[in-house]
Image 1 (tube, helix red, strand yellow):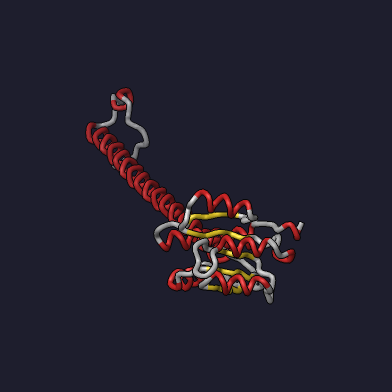
Image 2: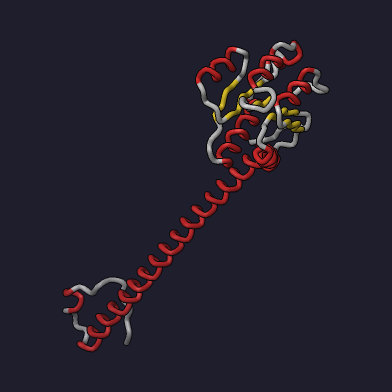
Length: 220
């Protein structure tokens, strides 16, 4: 006879008139069931822990995927979403910096027009009678033939360019030149970083601000 017990047999129960063999069988039956329940509990506990860990790491991975996706979207779409009608005048006497700057602006998502000049006189002549009113003028200070301060003075003397943002972007940080630039109407004076990539990041941020974030007075 094999009996299955769900609880441990009490001493009173074992003291009944059952035979010794029956009592032994009942005790062994209890131990057998108890061991099965314990094994099942341990196995189920391990499975639950494994499932929890898998779900936890899956959640972490999904969060990183969402973060990377949203960052990529903001970088490629939102950061430099500038209209095709934007026109920038860039005056830079270093031809390598000029080409690399234009490339970095294009890579950042800028899809407007960039007109560049390598010396101050060319820029001065163009801005004296511009074919199209620029959205932003970026001037180096120390230029051949004519410096950026003189170009700035010319720009601010023209009624049609009076409200056009002008950013002085130069490696020169002489206090007297900075003060003169602001007194003549420069909107910003930014000192270039020594490393080109850092300098390109500066310029990209400036273009983004003055062509997208900044609200011109004509639009008020």
